[in-house]
Image (cartoon, rainbow, N blue to C red; front, top):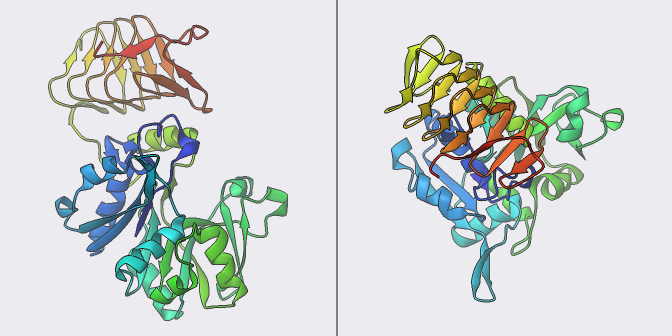
Length: 363
């Protein structure tokens, strides 16, 4: 089960017109990396709950045959005033909706959020879950004390049995440094505890119930890469990490034409006058004019244009973004409509107070 019905409000404007699982890393949606990882471990049947801009997920992934899996979708919404309106029913509520419809969850189920990249050893996690005869397991990861405020914190005894949760505690109030990664393993009986037809959340409602009832509910502590894109600043940091080659199984596309520089098809680059230091990817149909400087890590989507003597450093440009002549962009995520800096400050086209000069390469 991949949870993909949320709005992704904390990463706007990246998700203004895009579901969060579709936000690209190295040109591929985050959710594609998840599906590839599941397929490597032999997972064949995947349900996805969807709501906001659901058709963008469904059109891209289809029935899943490209990845050797079978994908089904459960839309959460209804008709209001003659229009179809998305209306998520919560992470547990979304699973219950599927279960009420067809009884899909008839065996041990792995549940993941659709907005994080992982390399979890799924086989080992399932083995531990079975050995402990758990009804539910939560995969946790130890985080620095100053970061607990960003996560749901899991409190467990020495056997790993979960006793309580803290939702984004202050560092001085945290009873644990083990964060829930949004990766769960459930037995079918768990869904008997979820009410039908109401909004119901896994972390804030179902899990406290399991702890209160003293059911076999365990935390797993594992060492693995968990790349969570909770905020725009996270997205930029993750993208730059990936470009540096710090994340396994995420390879640069295109052709390497110089050390640390990859390009797509049909690019126009004045190699004699530009100054490019990698790692940098330049997408297909991009144009890099004379005198341009690019300091990696940097990603340029297809159709981008850097005008003469402009400078780009440590940034991600979405498709068809144009940097004006002599302009500078540093430490940002940019699209033809907006620029977001590493602190999350957003500047939109038409803002007369900004000195930033960029636009749409198609114009």
